[in-house]
Length: 144
Image (cartoon, rainbow, N blue to C red; front, side):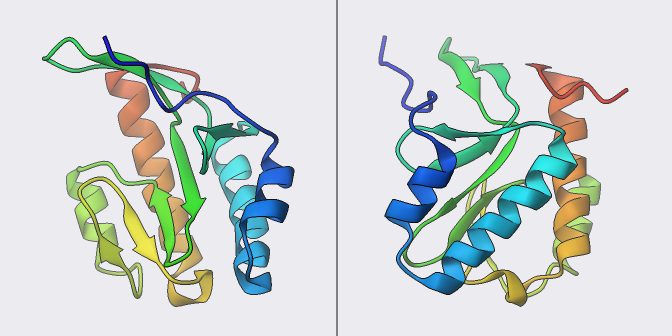
């Protein structure tokens, strides 16, 4: 079976300082860390080579592939931030209408900078995703 690439690696602050070149993207990265830590009530950890994740959950696909992943997270990639905060729910789909300027991938949201999106909507998307994962997976995110 293939090894899961999303495992804990280096320190988050060291990663942002060494990997992110733009001062604006660094500032946005540190702001996202603050926000996601507050929303998830979890410490930031590096997952793989470039994902900053909060909390963790166990998944298992019908194919038998299984592993751990962060509950919510992001990656400050060169072209755009990849935000891992979306669960395909009715509420999640509706919230996208008010998020702001972004592109949607299969499982993540791409934004150039935080000022392009509405942070209160990002918070609601994150909370919706945390709730969805808590209901459907074994996770560190059980909302009390």
